[in-house]
Length: 381
Ligand SMILES: [Fe+2]
Ligand SMILES: [Fe+2]
Ligand SMILES: [Fe+2]
Image (cartoon, rainbow, N blue to C red; front, top):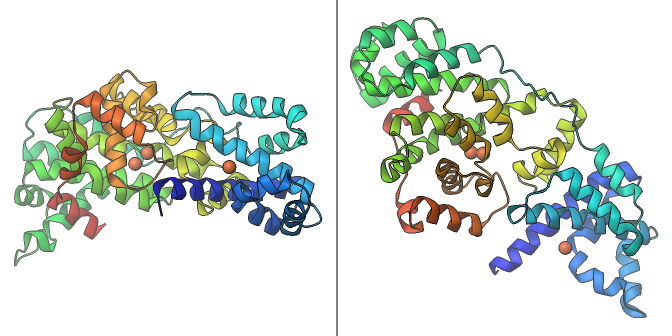
C-alpha cells in the first residue's frame, strides 16, 4: 500500500472515530456512521450522483442517510483542518467557527458544530499543579541540572531525602548489570559502585517516574526513558546543549501528559475512545483541551525554573514551526525517532527540523544507541 493510501486510510479512520463521538451527542447510531465515514471518499461521489449510485449510498447509510452524511461531512472537515495545522496554526475554536460558517453553503445542520464544542473541556484547570511527588523532582532537577562535577557525598545527601531516589540507586547497583556477589545496602556504596555520572542519571530518572506512574502513563514514561540516550546524542552532535541537559529535557518533554489525570471522567472517556479509534494523542488533546501536552508541560516545568529555551522546547516539541528555538526542532526529531506516534506524521516538519539543526535523516537514524544505566533502571522499575 502506498503512503498516500495509508494516509487516506488513517484520515478515514480518524473521521470515523470523530463521527461516533459526534453521533453520540447528535442522536445518531454509531454503526452506519462508522461505515459511512470509513468509506466516505467512495460514497461522496455516489451521494451526489443519480440513479444506482445514489441508491447505493442510501443502502450503506440507511434510513438516516441525510443526517449521517452531515455528520461525516463535519467530521471530515475537522480532520482536514487539524491536518493542516502544521501549515497554518489556528485555535480549534476558530476552526469550528469556520466550519460552522460553511453550513449555509454546504447544507449541513450548524447545530452539529455546537455538539462538537460540547465535547471540549475548556474549564480544564489552566494553572495545573503537579502532584506531591513533584517536590522530589524539583529538588533533583534544580540541584543536578548544573553542569558541574558532583561528589558522592553531595549525591548521597540528595538521595537520602527521598526514598524513591535512594531505592532506585540501590536497585540499579544491585541489578544484573553490575553483577556483584554481595548486595549493596547503603546509598553511599550504591553511588560509589555505579559511579557518580550514572548515579546522576538514575536519580534524574527516578525523580520523574512517580509523576508518570501516578497518572497511569507508564507507557509514556518508558518512551521518555528509552529515548533519553537519543536526546543526549542529539545534544552532543549539534552542540545545542550539554548531554546532561538533554537527558533532563528528554525525561521531562512529555510531562504535560500527566494532565490527563485532571480531566473530568466524561472527557477522559471521549479522550480514550478517540485515541483507541486511531486519533493521535496530540490531535485529541488539541481538539478536546485546546492545547497539547507540550503546551501544558511547559507550564508545569516553568515552576521548576528551567531556562526559557527549555520551556519553549517542551511547549513546541509537537509544533516546532511555531518556535524560533532550535531546541524545539531537536525535540521534535527525538519524538519522530522514538516512533511513539504521538501526533499526525509530518515529513515536512521532519525535513524542516533536520535543516534547522543541520542534520541529515541518515545521521539521525544512526543515533540513539542504548544507555545501559537507564536500561537497568527500566528493568528494575
Ligand atoms: Fe475525507
Ligand atoms: Fe510529546
Ligand atoms: Fe514524547
